[in-house]
Length: 389
Picture (cartoon, rainbow, N blue to C red):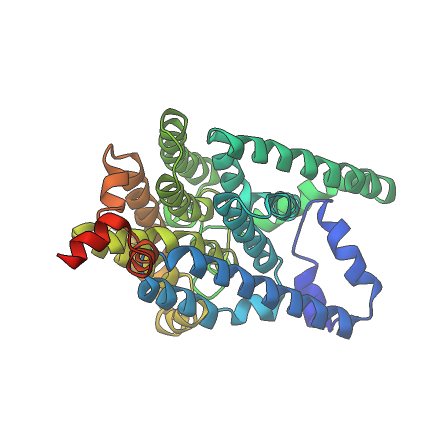
């Protein structure tokens, strides 16, 4: 059995029935080996995910991608301390992206995304939706993923319904209690975990500073994020698919995913999906490269463990209630800047994604490092003649 303090934390983490299919094998084991095995699985999947992101981004800018990836890995203490499934879910999502875009081990990618959707659909649902809107084989992969998810979910729902017939009502009551005033998931300015490493990252937590009313901050958040996502969805349907566009789209999806619904810092490892786009824009040169590096670095730093811990120490005694618009803006800037930084990051990558010349700008360097290296090692006949001259 886990310690009493940890049990109280685990009881407050609410997941849908399909999660229990994957948790049940660990529950059969004693606490110590189950805990160690879960930590090994979390660490292994995260290392694999970062390796794959590095493999995708090194074609453009190895130095920038390595810096961002290492910073994410350094700030994973909270993820391992809590054992949150976000580490595994996000890692499997990244594996899927690699499999789909590299067109290798596609069945494994479909299974990974299906498991992620079954456990935490609010973390990877928009990634799945992007592939569904994309043309060709990617839409087929998304539909196959949905079928596998349904196959996994239906037995779990039947099992839980047999064991706990009132699970839907109990789940609804638990969610309402967690998001109620004073609950651990409430995004209001006075909620329990407001200014620390457990800071809520959704846009509601920022809007609530101006009006602490769920009838206000929820619709406003959905309207802002929904409008941005709608613009991206329309552009995806109208444009031809390319890997350049895919990286820009995923870089916009990652921060918007964190903003539209309830997420904490452990879910922010999803920002790894923005690393290839950042490296690609950095290789393109110009002012865009610096903006890309700035917003991506700011998004990763503002949601990382160590900076958030230091942030808590500096803002512990800052009052959350402020009078006037200027005071409220100062409160947002000093106590919860992460949602605004994520919003800026999402808007920037969406802006680059929907620009008519986004592909040319993103690939302005002409060729990736890998292509140039290959041509140096294996020059074509024309290149050999030019070099000979």
